[in-house]
Length: 370
Image (cartoon, rainbow, N blue to C red; front, side, top):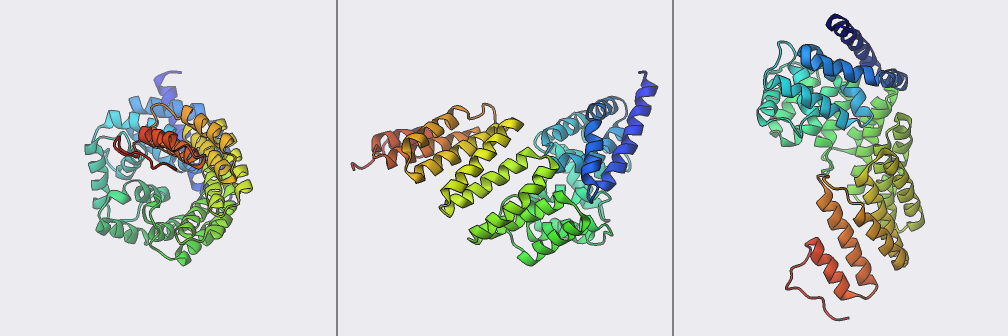
């Protein structure tokens, strides 16, 4: 296909992407997600071609695919596409595409240059109107919001209250009650989160409903309402399954299992960890697999099966992913669990050795004799 044909194909795909994007936050989202999934190879080729030959078109494609990528957990794909595009654009923002540039930076935040992040934040500061694309508010709040002054965060949320888009308004309630969506303690009331959930459910949006249920589950856990948090995670799990999002499903299962361990419902917790392990392995999620194995080891330790616990913890340690940003944390947790198992088995010297490897004690410390 010649350059003219490739340009026309990319333009046609952009029209499809924009049409699908309007439907991805409502009851038809599964149908339109399937439409886009069928075009995966063509969309990747179109973004690649436009990145090299028509950057404004590439920006629109990346922006238009943002909701689809986010609702299916396709962060790596989004980051790669956005990162390559920013590599061509640098800190130059094409006329009229400030919000699209911002979305590219948000997707590639981990690899974006400092000047690109600064340029994106300048776009936010200079924009006096609500964002045109509903997903922008959610992504900005979760990626850059935690590193932004409270004054600018309040200004961005306030200006987007002028939006007439119902999904944006639901997202605002979520972001206001649960700033950053990063696991920090929620500052808003359950009433706001419940209102966000109700809006998403009225729209028929599974992704938004899942986000609200996760926020409510976190809020319940922070306040010690573990059974309530289990109930909310249970409600969110079928939504992740409907979206075909194995990573989210595995994370929900691990969260629910951790809560069940706190409640000493060890049999149910072990079942959740095993199901999470299956999902994580299917999706190639090494970090989730390690977390599930460690959960199984912890459940076995609490149940008194120390031999099984040690076997599982050793496997988890051996499977800690190389090159993963959080691999040190995964190894520390595995080594810490092995130390706890040894201590429970009455082997203080071995427990000390594991803690030493984890960096949890100094060379000078020695365990007291039992």
